[in-house]
Length: 135
Image (tube, rainbow, N blue to C red):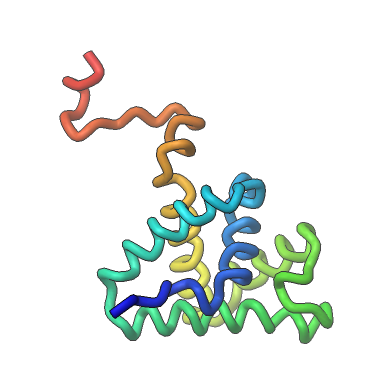
């Protein structure tokens, strides 16, 4: 049985959100996006199904919520409006919304910075053997 991608139903919105949360991600090519999504999906595959459903639902809500103010979905907003919208979500008085945002933010950072290319870009050289490997 072929397992469908966990992010496939929300891929455009996830990419737009991740690109707004981690601005360097906005310039990734298709192969790099696939690598980022594979990292996130691997992490999510080990989480409860309910959490995966909640994350997809939250991404869908974030996709349509800007329509109330801007008359456009998140993917239709320019960079500045995306940033203002996410800032409001991050500072929401509703704890559940803040938690959802921080979870999504964590997924975006996990996917972006777990890629070998990103680690090299920022000079990250950690090794499983610790400092001994660097000597």
